[in-house]
Image (tube, rainbow, N blue to C red):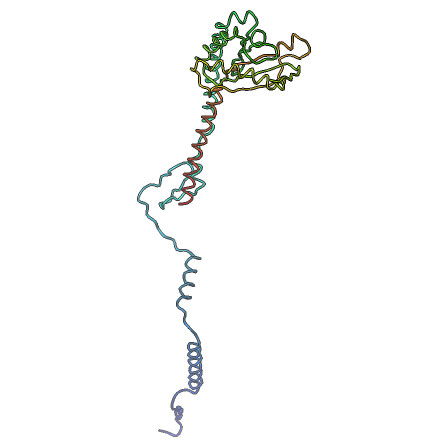
Length: 298
């Protein structure tokens, strides 16, 4: 080798100098993470809860394959999902509510029909009383009239009772027998009411007009029940004294009109029919309430 040729560079032996610093840094980092790991505690339950909350928060789309075309079961409960429909108790109540409008119309129609039949029946029975008591009506001893739901047979004091007494005149008993014969074939409750004028009475037998009016009504009831073919349960006894006059008690003629005994045949099939219809509605409503309560309990 000549003296003029360049001399080769001397190369350092071993690793570069920066590798020592890098190795120290990596060692320190490893020690740091080892310490962190030793200080940490793994809670598997909390980990699962965190994962579950994330799952619910972000959601997971699932594909549900329906076996058949969804069909609604009713107009109200419209669940078209393939899952099992679970209507609320409120929806069940709506589906099982009674159509009360139709029931009310039915009750009204039934009431009108019964009212027509009642009016016809009262007119026919009133005519029977008038035919049986035609002579007594002409003589002014009896009056027969029909009102809304009853027939009134009005017995005047003249010829029926002595003045101030409640014992029937013997000659008037055949007239009561005629009334009895018509009442036997007539339905309904029978009210017998006694009335007097406003002249006070105070005798050893009757302390007031109250006792006189009640005693006269009692005498008529006993005479009607004497044949034994009418049930006592049909009769109602009433005494009004001078509290319900037909005309003002301002003359002897008017007082004579007010002294009377009335036999009243009470007929109220319209009310009974309406009551039965209302009871049926109440029973059906109670049945629906019971079914709804059962559903709610379930």
